[in-house]
Length: 199
Image (cartoon, rainbow, N blue to C red; front, side, top):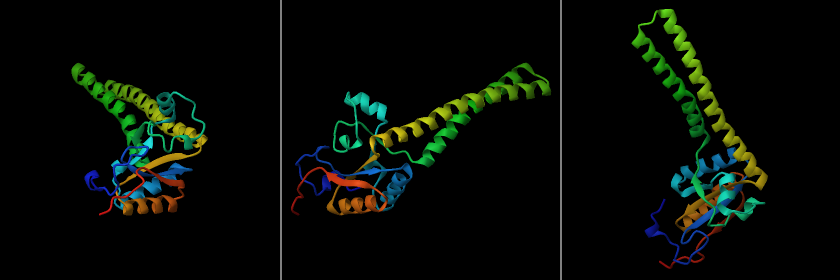
């Protein structure tokens, strides 16, 4: 992404100050992820792409009922976060599952080593504590997966999944709009400074 000091946009402010952005809605996370991958393959950094925080946090921050996602598109007060793709989410779920299992097995090994237990006792402790760790890990992984599912459901109820893409030049602007539209984006538009500096 072009450094801000070299942007073409002037100092006239928009919803996000002196930041010009492409705005888009998607009907599914698959469409949104395809668009993001397309953007990243065409020179947009992950730092230039943002999403609103989960709906419950948006409502808490704005302190009013949100009836439609279009109310949020050009609202600078909406809190944001970076997009985490599905692969990263799967890795996070796997990590949440494995960490408690690992800790439980380490504890089991410590108990066995400290007490010099017979083999069948050692196996029993490994199985018992491993099962407890797996249950705990499964619970945390399930909660993480459900949060993502419920978030997408809540955003769809608002009218779509919202994405912002920061642009630093007219070329980036054109590219962003084309990419969003060809990846099933809708209500694609721009907000930010209105005029371009003369070079």
